[in-house]
Image 1 (tube, rainbow, N blue to C red):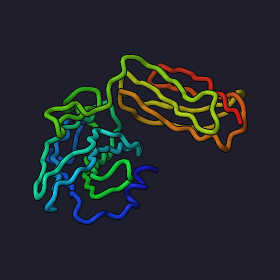
Image 2 (cartoon, rainbow, N blue to C red):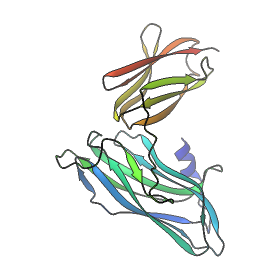
Image 3 (spheres, rainbow, N blue to C red):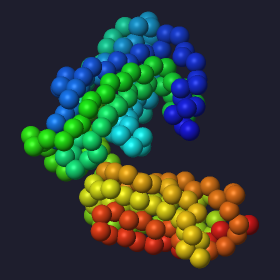
Image 4 (tube, rainbow, N blue to C red):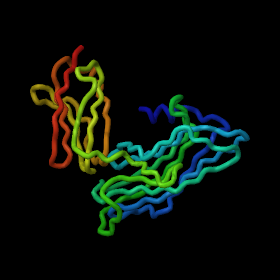
Amino acid sequence: ALLQLFLQTPETALMPEVSMTLISPMLMPGGGYVRYEGELTNSATIPSTVDVWLDMVDPSGTVNNLASRSDVVVDASSTIMRSFTTNIPASSQNGIYYFYIYVGDDEALQLFSSDYFYVYKTAGDDATGDDQFTTTGWFDDEVEASIAVASEFSMSAAPNPFNPETVIRFDLPEAKITSVAVYDVNGRLVANLVDGFRSAGSHEITVDASAWPSGVYFARLQSGDIQQTQKLLLVK
């Protein structure tokens, strides 16, 4: 929904423009390192301060934020260029991975410019890299820009009790196929919130229960062979 708001906002004249170029091959057998370059160009005669962020959309359609930088100053009539590397783990889904770069004003929900490319991950025996999504290279030298890796498997919800929204947070120490579903006290499925590959790190889901009746619910997190249940209390 947030991305749609950005995309619906008209571009502003004389604001920095961003572009991105894929350096590594488009076909990634078994996964591995995706290398690409980004350019942020300010054609105006005065400096500009913008927010810049990188997103990746995996084959399941999940948006993964790779890196974000706020208040980036781009001098007048100048270009900032940086090289990036993102690892796609061998254990991740096969399919198309879309990489997006945006420049805008985060607080004002304004998008000035964007660009993207995509790569295909297929099955293969020549995978390189580690088993986690990681991204390096940003506006600081070799900054680790992936989500921080969690040390243990956990889930929580806040506020709880809630009405009508709560945020479920869960930490994954390893990248795995993950599901988060909500059930009522009779064990009936109420909502399927997550179903697919998720990277190691911390994740959040906003649950809108405005259409649910008051009562007790249970959110179940399962990642690989490990699972955890969180009791939810909806009070209207």
